[in-house]
Image (cartoon, rainbow, N blue to C red):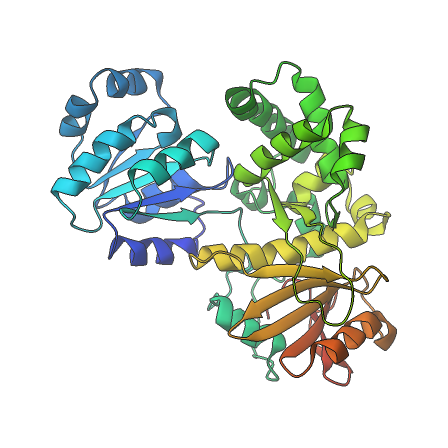
Length: 410
Protein backbone atom coordinates (compact mmCIF):
# COMPACT_ATOMS: atom_id res chain seq x y z
CA UNK A 1 0.00 0.00 0.00
CA UNK A 2 1.41 3.36 -1.02
CA UNK A 3 2.78 5.40 1.85
CA UNK A 4 2.64 2.51 4.32
CA UNK A 5 5.28 2.55 7.03
CA UNK A 6 6.00 -0.88 8.56
CA UNK A 7 4.69 -1.19 12.10
CA UNK A 8 6.49 -3.10 14.80
CA UNK A 9 3.20 -4.47 16.11
CA UNK A 10 2.93 -6.56 12.92
CA UNK A 11 5.68 -8.82 14.31
CA UNK A 12 3.69 -9.29 17.51
CA UNK A 13 0.47 -9.98 15.59
CA UNK A 14 2.23 -12.72 13.61
CA UNK A 15 3.53 -14.25 16.82
CA UNK A 16 0.06 -14.18 18.36
CA UNK A 17 -1.49 -15.80 15.27
CA UNK A 18 0.76 -18.81 15.84
CA UNK A 19 -0.97 -19.49 19.17
CA UNK A 20 -4.44 -17.92 19.28
CA UNK A 21 -7.42 -18.63 17.01
CA UNK A 22 -8.19 -14.90 16.99
CA UNK A 23 -6.23 -11.67 17.44
CA UNK A 24 -7.89 -8.36 18.25
CA UNK A 25 -6.02 -5.14 17.41
CA UNK A 26 -7.41 -2.14 19.25
CA UNK A 27 -6.23 1.44 19.48
CA UNK A 28 -7.17 5.06 19.05
CA UNK A 29 -8.92 6.16 15.90
CA UNK A 30 -6.59 6.89 12.98
CA UNK A 31 -3.69 4.98 14.52
CA UNK A 32 -3.46 2.76 11.42
CA UNK A 33 -5.21 -0.47 12.45
CA UNK A 34 -6.96 -1.11 9.15
CA UNK A 35 -3.90 -0.21 7.10
CA UNK A 36 -1.68 -2.53 9.14
CA UNK A 37 -4.02 -5.51 8.88
CA UNK A 38 -4.79 -5.13 5.17
CA UNK A 39 -1.18 -4.45 4.18
CA UNK A 40 0.54 -7.06 6.32
CA UNK A 41 -2.10 -9.81 6.25
CA UNK A 42 -4.37 -9.08 3.28
CA UNK A 43 -2.68 -11.68 1.10
CA UNK A 44 -3.86 -14.52 3.36
CA UNK A 45 -6.95 -13.07 5.03
CA UNK A 46 -10.13 -11.91 3.33
CA UNK A 47 -11.33 -8.50 4.51
CA UNK A 48 -14.69 -7.06 5.46
CA UNK A 49 -15.55 -3.85 7.26
CA UNK A 50 -18.46 -3.63 9.68
CA UNK A 51 -18.36 0.16 9.50
CA UNK A 52 -20.48 -0.03 6.33
CA UNK A 53 -24.16 0.16 7.33
CA UNK A 54 -25.27 -2.43 4.78
CA UNK A 55 -22.64 -4.95 5.86
CA UNK A 56 -23.39 -4.33 9.52
CA UNK A 57 -27.13 -4.75 9.00
CA UNK A 58 -26.63 -8.09 7.25
CA UNK A 59 -24.28 -9.30 9.99
CA UNK A 60 -26.73 -8.41 12.74
CA UNK A 61 -29.80 -9.77 10.94
CA UNK A 62 -28.26 -13.19 10.21
CA UNK A 63 -24.99 -13.73 12.12
CA UNK A 64 -24.65 -17.42 11.26
CA UNK A 65 -25.32 -16.81 7.59
CA UNK A 66 -22.93 -13.88 7.58
CA UNK A 67 -20.08 -15.92 9.06
CA UNK A 68 -20.80 -18.80 6.70
CA UNK A 69 -20.61 -16.38 3.77
CA UNK A 70 -17.36 -14.85 5.04
CA UNK A 71 -15.34 -17.80 6.22
CA UNK A 72 -11.96 -17.76 7.95
CA UNK A 73 -9.23 -16.72 7.55
CA UNK A 74 -10.93 -13.34 7.79
CA UNK A 75 -10.24 -9.79 8.90
CA UNK A 76 -13.32 -8.32 10.62
CA UNK A 77 -12.68 -4.60 10.75
CA UNK A 78 -14.45 -2.24 13.18
CA UNK A 79 -15.89 -5.11 15.20
CA UNK A 80 -17.21 -2.66 17.82
CA UNK A 81 -20.10 -1.90 15.45
CA UNK A 82 -21.38 -5.48 15.74
CA UNK A 83 -20.22 -6.87 19.10
CA UNK A 84 -23.05 -9.44 18.97
CA UNK A 85 -20.99 -11.30 16.38
CA UNK A 86 -18.50 -12.22 19.11
CA UNK A 87 -20.92 -14.81 20.55
CA UNK A 88 -21.23 -16.57 17.20
CA UNK A 89 -17.50 -16.26 16.60
CA UNK A 90 -16.91 -18.02 19.93
CA UNK A 91 -19.00 -20.99 18.75
CA UNK A 92 -17.00 -21.25 15.53
CA UNK A 93 -13.70 -21.09 17.41
CA UNK A 94 -14.84 -23.74 19.89
CA UNK A 95 -15.58 -26.06 16.96
CA UNK A 96 -12.20 -25.36 15.36
CA UNK A 97 -9.42 -24.18 17.69
CA UNK A 98 -6.74 -23.93 15.04
CA UNK A 99 -4.62 -20.79 15.54
CA UNK A 100 -4.48 -17.90 13.11
CA UNK A 101 -8.04 -17.85 11.73
CA UNK A 102 -9.49 -14.48 12.72
CA UNK A 103 -8.12 -10.96 12.80
CA UNK A 104 -10.38 -8.41 14.48
CA UNK A 105 -9.92 -4.68 14.82
CA UNK A 106 -11.76 -1.96 16.63
CA UNK A 107 -11.41 1.29 18.48
CA UNK A 108 -11.33 0.19 22.08
CA UNK A 109 -14.54 0.86 23.96
CA UNK A 110 -16.27 -0.49 27.01
CA UNK A 111 -18.91 -2.55 25.13
CA UNK A 112 -16.28 -4.08 22.84
CA UNK A 113 -13.85 -5.05 25.59
CA UNK A 114 -16.66 -6.30 27.83
CA UNK A 115 -17.87 -8.49 24.96
CA UNK A 116 -14.38 -9.80 24.29
CA UNK A 117 -13.72 -10.65 27.94
CA UNK A 118 -17.10 -12.36 28.31
CA UNK A 119 -17.09 -14.39 25.10
CA UNK A 120 -13.55 -14.83 23.77
CA UNK A 121 -11.48 -15.18 26.94
CA UNK A 122 -8.64 -17.61 26.25
CA UNK A 123 -9.40 -17.56 22.54
CA UNK A 124 -8.16 -14.11 21.54
CA UNK A 125 -4.94 -12.13 21.96
CA UNK A 126 -5.67 -8.45 22.56
CA UNK A 127 -3.04 -6.06 21.20
CA UNK A 128 -2.92 -2.27 21.01
CA UNK A 129 -1.74 -0.19 18.06
CA UNK A 130 -0.71 3.29 19.16
CA UNK A 131 0.25 6.17 16.87
CA UNK A 132 3.66 5.81 15.25
CA UNK A 133 6.68 5.67 17.54
CA UNK A 134 9.82 7.63 16.82
CA UNK A 135 11.79 4.48 15.97
CA UNK A 136 9.14 3.56 13.39
CA UNK A 137 9.15 7.03 11.83
CA UNK A 138 12.93 7.28 11.55
CA UNK A 139 13.04 3.71 10.19
CA UNK A 140 15.52 2.54 12.78
CA UNK A 141 17.36 -0.50 11.35
CA UNK A 142 16.45 -2.67 14.34
CA UNK A 143 13.56 -1.34 16.42
CA UNK A 144 14.20 -2.90 19.82
CA UNK A 145 11.91 -4.82 22.09
CA UNK A 146 11.61 -3.56 25.67
CA UNK A 147 14.79 -5.24 26.86
CA UNK A 148 16.69 -3.96 23.84
CA UNK A 149 15.46 -0.44 24.50
CA UNK A 150 16.53 -0.69 28.14
CA UNK A 151 19.99 -1.74 27.03
CA UNK A 152 20.16 1.09 24.51
CA UNK A 153 19.16 3.77 27.02
CA UNK A 154 20.81 2.53 30.20
CA UNK A 155 23.62 0.39 28.76
CA UNK A 156 27.18 1.61 28.67
CA UNK A 157 27.71 1.08 24.95
CA UNK A 158 26.51 3.66 22.42
CA UNK A 159 25.45 1.85 19.19
CA UNK A 160 26.93 3.45 16.09
CA UNK A 161 23.70 3.69 14.10
CA UNK A 162 23.37 6.65 11.75
CA UNK A 163 19.72 7.29 11.15
CA UNK A 164 18.59 8.42 7.71
CA UNK A 165 15.89 10.60 9.29
CA UNK A 166 17.02 12.23 12.50
CA UNK A 167 13.97 12.96 14.66
CA UNK A 168 13.21 16.64 15.15
CA UNK A 169 11.52 17.47 18.47
CA UNK A 170 9.74 20.58 17.19
CA UNK A 171 8.20 18.67 14.29
CA UNK A 172 7.24 15.78 16.56
CA UNK A 173 5.44 18.09 18.97
CA UNK A 174 3.76 19.86 16.05
CA UNK A 175 2.56 16.86 14.02
CA UNK A 176 2.92 13.82 16.28
CA UNK A 177 2.57 10.16 15.38
CA UNK A 178 -0.85 9.68 13.77
CA UNK A 179 0.20 8.19 10.41
CA UNK A 180 -1.74 10.44 8.03
CA UNK A 181 -0.52 13.75 9.42
CA UNK A 182 2.89 12.43 10.44
CA UNK A 183 3.86 10.96 7.07
CA UNK A 184 2.27 13.53 4.75
CA UNK A 185 3.53 17.06 5.26
CA UNK A 186 0.90 18.40 2.85
CA UNK A 187 -1.84 17.55 5.37
CA UNK A 188 -2.92 20.72 7.16
CA UNK A 189 -2.29 20.29 10.89
CA UNK A 190 -5.09 22.52 12.12
CA UNK A 191 -7.71 21.03 9.83
CA UNK A 192 -6.65 17.44 10.55
CA UNK A 193 -6.66 17.71 14.33
CA UNK A 194 -9.81 19.82 14.28
CA UNK A 195 -11.59 17.13 12.29
CA UNK A 196 -10.14 14.40 14.50
CA UNK A 197 -11.45 15.97 17.69
CA UNK A 198 -14.85 16.67 16.17
CA UNK A 199 -15.17 13.14 14.81
CA UNK A 200 -14.04 11.61 18.08
CA UNK A 201 -16.56 13.63 20.06
CA UNK A 202 -19.44 12.98 17.69
CA UNK A 203 -18.88 9.29 17.04
CA UNK A 204 -17.25 7.75 20.09
CA UNK A 205 -18.34 9.91 22.98
CA UNK A 206 -21.98 10.12 21.98
CA UNK A 207 -22.09 6.32 21.60
CA UNK A 208 -20.27 5.56 24.85
CA UNK A 209 -21.43 8.26 27.22
CA UNK A 210 -24.66 9.61 25.82
CA UNK A 211 -23.34 13.10 26.57
CA UNK A 212 -26.05 15.70 26.11
CA UNK A 213 -23.66 18.66 25.95
CA UNK A 214 -20.75 17.78 23.67
CA UNK A 215 -19.41 21.29 24.17
CA UNK A 216 -18.90 20.58 27.88
CA UNK A 217 -17.07 17.37 27.06
CA UNK A 218 -14.92 19.21 24.51
CA UNK A 219 -13.89 21.72 27.17
CA UNK A 220 -13.09 18.83 29.48
CA UNK A 221 -10.80 17.22 26.89
CA UNK A 222 -8.97 20.54 26.44
CA UNK A 223 -8.51 20.83 30.20
CA UNK A 224 -7.06 17.32 30.33
CA UNK A 225 -4.67 18.21 27.51
CA UNK A 226 -3.52 21.29 29.42
CA UNK A 227 -2.62 18.97 32.31
CA UNK A 228 -0.56 16.47 30.30
CA UNK A 229 2.58 15.50 32.19
CA UNK A 230 1.16 16.57 35.57
CA UNK A 231 -0.36 14.89 38.61
CA UNK A 232 -4.05 14.24 38.16
CA UNK A 233 -6.27 16.14 40.58
CA UNK A 234 -9.87 15.07 40.06
CA UNK A 235 -11.27 17.77 42.31
CA UNK A 236 -9.53 20.61 40.49
CA UNK A 237 -10.40 19.15 37.11
CA UNK A 238 -14.07 18.82 38.06
CA UNK A 239 -14.15 22.42 39.32
CA UNK A 240 -12.56 23.82 36.18
CA UNK A 241 -14.77 21.71 33.90
CA UNK A 242 -17.91 22.69 35.77
CA UNK A 243 -19.02 19.10 36.36
CA UNK A 244 -19.08 16.68 39.29
CA UNK A 245 -16.13 14.52 40.34
CA UNK A 246 -17.98 11.29 39.40
CA UNK A 247 -18.58 12.74 35.93
CA UNK A 248 -14.88 13.55 35.59
CA UNK A 249 -13.98 10.01 36.62
CA UNK A 250 -16.40 8.54 34.08
CA UNK A 251 -15.28 10.82 31.24
CA UNK A 252 -11.62 10.22 32.00
CA UNK A 253 -12.14 6.45 31.99
CA UNK A 254 -13.53 6.74 28.45
CA UNK A 255 -10.51 8.76 27.30
CA UNK A 256 -8.27 6.08 28.79
CA UNK A 257 -10.23 3.17 27.28
CA UNK A 258 -10.16 4.90 23.89
CA UNK A 259 -6.35 5.20 24.10
CA UNK A 260 -6.50 9.00 24.00
CA UNK A 261 -4.88 9.36 27.42
CA UNK A 262 -2.56 7.23 29.52
CA UNK A 263 -2.50 7.31 33.30
CA UNK A 264 0.95 6.68 34.77
CA UNK A 265 0.47 5.06 38.15
CA UNK A 266 2.65 5.88 41.16
CA UNK A 267 5.46 3.53 42.13
CA UNK A 268 4.47 1.87 45.37
CA UNK A 269 7.82 1.43 47.06
CA UNK A 270 8.15 3.89 49.90
CA UNK A 271 11.96 4.25 49.67
CA UNK A 272 11.99 5.94 53.04
CA UNK A 273 9.73 8.82 51.97
CA UNK A 274 6.03 9.51 52.03
CA UNK A 275 4.79 9.45 48.47
CA UNK A 276 1.85 10.86 46.59
CA UNK A 277 -0.69 8.33 45.32
CA UNK A 278 -2.11 10.23 42.36
CA UNK A 279 -1.39 9.11 38.80
CA UNK A 280 0.06 11.44 36.19
CA UNK A 281 -1.97 12.01 33.05
CA UNK A 282 -0.57 12.04 29.51
CA UNK A 283 -2.17 12.42 26.12
CA UNK A 284 -0.90 9.57 23.97
CA UNK A 285 0.00 11.99 21.17
CA UNK A 286 1.91 15.15 22.19
CA UNK A 287 0.84 16.99 19.02
CA UNK A 288 -2.82 16.43 19.86
CA UNK A 289 -2.09 17.86 23.32
CA UNK A 290 -0.45 20.91 21.77
CA UNK A 291 -3.34 21.42 19.38
CA UNK A 292 -5.89 21.27 22.18
CA UNK A 293 -3.81 23.82 24.09
CA UNK A 294 -4.01 26.16 21.11
CA UNK A 295 -0.28 25.99 20.33
CA UNK A 296 0.18 26.36 16.57
CA UNK A 297 3.92 26.76 15.97
CA UNK A 298 7.23 25.17 16.86
CA UNK A 299 8.19 28.32 18.75
CA UNK A 300 5.08 28.17 20.91
CA UNK A 301 5.56 24.47 21.59
CA UNK A 302 9.28 24.59 22.42
CA UNK A 303 9.52 28.04 23.96
CA UNK A 304 6.35 28.29 26.01
CA UNK A 305 5.63 27.35 29.62
CA UNK A 306 4.26 23.93 28.62
CA UNK A 307 7.44 22.82 26.79
CA UNK A 308 8.66 20.68 29.69
CA UNK A 309 5.35 18.87 30.05
CA UNK A 310 5.09 18.26 26.30
CA UNK A 311 8.62 16.85 26.07
CA UNK A 312 7.88 14.62 29.04
CA UNK A 313 4.71 13.49 27.30
CA UNK A 314 6.69 12.65 24.17
CA UNK A 315 9.19 10.55 26.13
CA UNK A 316 6.77 8.72 28.41
CA UNK A 317 4.45 7.76 25.56
CA UNK A 318 7.39 6.29 23.62
CA UNK A 319 7.83 3.85 26.49
CA UNK A 320 4.12 3.02 26.54
CA UNK A 321 4.33 2.28 22.81
CA UNK A 322 7.44 0.11 23.26
CA UNK A 323 5.65 -2.18 25.72
CA UNK A 324 2.47 -2.38 23.69
CA UNK A 325 4.32 -3.02 20.42
CA UNK A 326 5.73 -6.15 22.09
CA UNK A 327 2.30 -7.19 23.32
CA UNK A 328 3.08 -6.40 26.96
CA UNK A 329 1.26 -4.36 29.56
CA UNK A 330 3.44 -1.33 30.40
CA UNK A 331 5.33 -1.76 33.66
CA UNK A 332 5.79 1.99 34.04
CA UNK A 333 5.46 4.28 37.04
CA UNK A 334 6.28 7.70 38.40
CA UNK A 335 7.50 8.55 41.90
CA UNK A 336 7.07 11.68 43.94
CA UNK A 337 7.51 12.33 47.64
CA UNK A 338 5.42 14.77 49.59
CA UNK A 339 8.62 16.77 50.01
CA UNK A 340 8.84 17.36 46.26
CA UNK A 341 11.45 14.78 45.26
CA UNK A 342 10.30 13.41 41.90
CA UNK A 343 11.23 10.88 39.23
CA UNK A 344 9.34 11.30 35.96
CA UNK A 345 9.45 7.67 34.83
CA UNK A 346 10.41 4.35 36.39
CA UNK A 347 10.58 1.15 34.34
CA UNK A 348 10.39 -1.93 36.56
CA UNK A 349 11.92 -4.91 34.81
CA UNK A 350 13.43 -8.19 35.97
CA UNK A 351 13.87 -6.93 39.52
CA UNK A 352 15.62 -3.73 38.43
CA UNK A 353 14.44 -0.12 38.46
CA UNK A 354 15.30 2.04 35.45
CA UNK A 355 14.65 5.68 36.34
CA UNK A 356 14.40 8.58 33.91
CA UNK A 357 14.16 12.32 34.43
CA UNK A 358 12.99 14.37 31.43
CA UNK A 359 14.06 17.95 30.69
CA UNK A 360 13.36 20.21 27.73
CA UNK A 361 16.90 21.59 27.81
CA UNK A 362 19.41 21.16 24.99
CA UNK A 363 22.28 21.92 27.37
CA UNK A 364 22.14 19.36 30.18
CA UNK A 365 24.20 20.07 33.28
CA UNK A 366 24.77 18.12 36.52
CA UNK A 367 22.19 20.15 38.49
CA UNK A 368 19.48 18.89 36.11
CA UNK A 369 20.01 15.41 37.55
CA UNK A 370 20.17 16.39 41.23
CA UNK A 371 16.76 14.95 42.13
CA UNK A 372 17.54 11.78 40.16
CA UNK A 373 20.84 11.33 42.02
CA UNK A 374 19.07 11.68 45.36
CA UNK A 375 16.49 9.11 44.32
CA UNK A 376 19.20 6.65 43.21
CA UNK A 377 20.76 6.95 46.66
CA UNK A 378 17.41 5.99 48.20
CA UNK A 379 16.65 3.20 45.74
CA UNK A 380 19.95 1.37 46.13
CA UNK A 381 21.94 -0.90 43.81
CA UNK A 382 18.99 -2.25 41.82
CA UNK A 383 18.29 1.22 40.35
CA UNK A 384 19.88 3.05 37.43
CA UNK A 385 19.19 6.53 36.11
CA UNK A 386 19.37 8.67 32.96
CA UNK A 387 18.31 12.18 31.98
CA UNK A 388 16.41 12.44 28.67
CA UNK A 389 16.72 15.80 26.94
CA UNK A 390 17.27 17.56 23.60
CA UNK A 391 20.66 16.14 22.66
CA UNK A 392 21.64 13.75 19.87
CA UNK A 393 24.40 11.64 21.45
CA UNK A 394 24.45 10.02 24.92
CA UNK A 395 26.73 12.05 27.20
CA UNK A 396 28.07 11.40 30.74
CA UNK A 397 26.49 13.87 33.14
CA UNK A 398 27.52 12.87 36.66
CA UNK A 399 28.63 9.64 38.34
CA UNK A 400 26.33 6.79 37.26
CA UNK A 401 24.01 9.15 35.33
CA UNK A 402 24.22 10.09 31.67
CA UNK A 403 22.12 12.30 29.43
CA UNK A 404 20.44 10.59 26.47
CA UNK A 405 18.45 11.84 23.45
CA UNK A 406 14.75 12.39 24.09
CA UNK A 407 13.81 10.20 21.11
CA UNK A 408 15.55 7.09 22.49
CA UNK A 409 16.75 6.25 18.96
CA UNK A 410 20.42 6.31 18.04
